[in-house]
Image: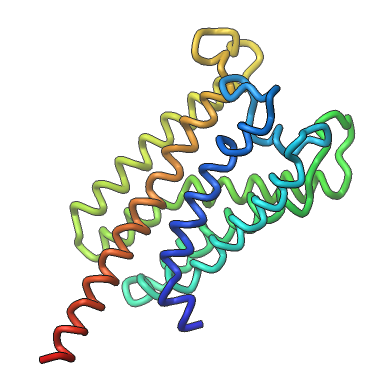
Amino acid sequence: MNVLKKYGYYFLLLGAISDFLTPYILGIFYPKMNQMTMVISVFGDVDSPVRQAFLIWSVVSGLLFVLAIPALYQTFSTTSQKLATLLALAIGFYGVGDCIFTGLFSINTEQANWNLSTWIHNIGSGLGYAGFFLFPLFLYFLYQKQEKATYSRLYLILFLISIFFAGIYGLARIPAINQLPVLNQLGFCQRVSFIFNYLPIMIFAVDQIKNLEKVKSSNRKNFRS
């Protein structure tokens, strides 16, 4: 557990980078993939040439997120155990529900009826995205409690931006209006929306890693003196 608390933010950053890059790297090996119009879940379809790689990669990314949970909780547990738990659960839900479940319970989009695998996949994905989406909001509340105005303002702004682009992505999924310019590029709308979900996680992870390195450097100086 001490190892996870020590290196948790490295796992968090690696998980975010890994998950973010998945569609762009696998897209190289999927000639029919149109990143502008096709959603990321297409990589896991039964006729996808990169299906197995996508499913395995999703599980690995999810495990990296899960390994970050102890570090997240430890950082804020003295500020608010309740909010620290919610923050840790946000990443846990995303890692398990949207990443690991995607890999273990894949779906066939051509099937008309939902089977058990489809139910688990879709429920997990919904819970996972909720955690993904709410992560910066929990950080906003935690930094408010710590009276760190700059950080709380940053994560509130990032949360509001993510709401805006999530709204655009939601509109792009509505048949009645998704023929309009921009909204007719569903894949593009999804990827832009996801950028602003990954961004708070990456910024937070990098900031925490910098803080850890400063502490290590200070401890080394004190030891030498």
